[in-house]
Structure formats: C-alpha cells, structure tokens
Image 1 (cartoon, one colour):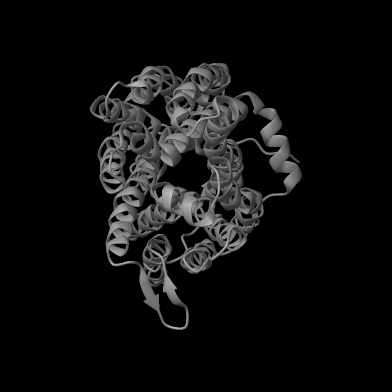
Image 2: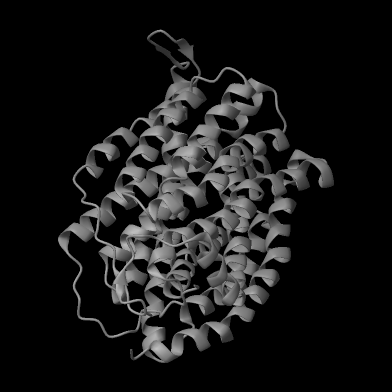
Length: 451
C-alpha cells in the first residue's frame, strides 16, 4: 500500500534542540564532503599538464574529469541509498571515504589514460556512498525546524571543497613542478600532477578515524505513519509516491540538474578559460577562482539557505522550491557575461555573483525534497536527485563545454564562448521546471504547516 508523506516544513513549530553529537556529526560530514569535492575537482587545475603528458584533447580530458568519475557514482547512488534506508549509515559512509581516498592516490600512480580512467571510476564509486546516507543521518540528527540550515551548512562542502581543490591543487602542483616531481618508494619517479592526486587523497584516512566517534542516529518517526521506519520501504511504495507527486519531483530535480550543469561546467573549465584567454598563471588562476568559490560560493550557500526559513514563516510556503527559480533568473547575466569579459579582472568579478548563486540552490533544493518525502524514503530520494544532477551536471557538464569547444567552435581559444552559451540555454529551462513545481508543492505542504 502506498504511503503519503506528511511534511514537516521548515516553518513548523518545534522546540526540539539539536544535540552536541548532531553538530559534531555535521562537522565531520561537512569535512568529508569538502574532501570529496577536492578529490573529484582537483583535475580542473591540472588540465594542461595532464593533456600534455597523456597527449589528449579537451573532449578526451572531459571524459576523465566527468564521465569516468560519474558513471558508477551515478549508477551506485540509488542502491547504496536503499541500503542506507535499511542498515547502518555511518559504516556505509566510512567505507566509502576509505575507498575513494585510496583510489584518488592511485590516480597519482596512473601512467596511461586507461589507468587514470579506472582510478577515476574508483573515486566515483567511493564518493557515491557519502551524500545519500549523510542527508538521511542529518534529517534524523536535527529537528525539522533546523534541517534547512543544517543542509545549507553541509552544502558548504561544494563551495569550500571546490575552492580548495583549485587553491590546494595549484599550490601542490607548483611545488612539485618546481622540484621536478617526486620519487616514491617502490614506484619511482612521479610527475607534479601525479603527486597532486596523492597529496589530496591521503587526508581522507583522517576523516575515517573521526567518523569512528559518531553514533548511528536513531531514525525519526513519520508523523502520518505513527511508527519508526526501521524496516524501510518497498520499491513499489517508493515509485508510487514519486508518481503521485511527480510535478514536484520533476520540477525540483530538473531545475537542480540544469543549475548543476552550469556549476560543474564552471568548476571544470573556468580556471583553464582564464589561462587560455588572458594568459593568467596557472597557480594564480587556481587561487583566484578558488577564493571565489570559498568566499562568494560559501556566502551564497549560507545566505540563500538561511533565507528559506524566514520566507516560510512569512507565508511563502513554497520557499525551498521557489528559491531554485529565483537563482536561475538571477544567475543568467553574470554567468553569460563573465566569459565574454574584455579583461581577466572583470571575468573574475563577474564570477563572484555567478558562484554565489550557483552554490546557493543546493540547500533549498534538498530541503524541498526532504520536506515532501517520508522518512523511510529520504535517502532514496536524495540519491535519485543526485542521480539526475550528476547525470546532467557532473557527467555531461564538463563534456558539453569541451564538445562545444572541440566540435562546434573547433578552437581551444573558443572555450570562453562555450562557457557563455551554457547559461543562455539552461537558465530558462531551469526557471520553467521550478515554476511548474510551485503550485503542487504549496498544495501538499500548506495543510500541514500548523500540524
């Protein structure tokens, strides 16, 4: 028999307090999320050296950056989430972090395109075990009234990790480039870009230790079911729930996916755009874009995530979903004009509002999905959302940009036009998808605001 969620919206009255254990878990999971983005995105600052050593094109590089990582990251997300809805989530996260850290180090051992491709697959497999269980754990650790802000804090992993991947990657690469690489026991000489992978992969083992101090949280009770959700749910129930509220799920997940394409397109290629178009030093380009990600991106994640609660309290019931529409409308101009700037200073300045907005929709999007989803389906819905976001964003985002550069414009120097074209096409689509979800979202959530 199908179940319908009774939402617990961010504005609902709730005096329950979050415990110190909840904040410790949030901190460790945030650190893991930051590291995951460092390990997956560090390649963005290594495009030139990797292309030169392996003799590949932009398109071939994009397959290593996006497709190799995402192919199993996407496929494994939903089965891992179903496992998380039935078993111990902390151990799933722990095993995943250990595995992807080892595989990131093995990226630094790669001597051929095939070896690097396989190692990148391994990084994706490990990282698939992080976010769906983490979202489910946070939903149980924090009371409903505090969940939007907890998810917003967790989403800082995108901005801080994306920024640090550029800054740390650029610094480590320049250090080893100046020393001519390094010599490792049993492995011999490795180049600067290879040592960069090893350096960013090792800290994951420390996160594994810190996770040992977290207790698996007790699963909350779905208020409409009147019982805990230890048993999970059947796929039939899950599918029926999705179909019943398909306009909301398609709208929120679809808008999220379009915005994710833009985010990953910029993360993968903006540094290289600064280098190719204006001749900016590789380390300097990484530092500039990394700081934009950390400062502007983190502010966007916090500010936009924090705005949801007051909006709901003032009567904007659909605030989490509406925020996706607002972001898509506002980001169009800075994201399109940045790559067309006549000088690097203006390109960097316009990247600030673009990254502020493109890192602000994660928290509201997840909040919208968690609000309308029964507890025992939350990890699966998170995995499904990540499936589509990463299918379009992570797998296709970098590749779409590279394909436009290689096959449409046919010139490495035309990278700027490929980046500028993305928001022109994708922002209107994201706005339409988010808009069509607003009315059914209000109809589902509004009756339970005072429950």
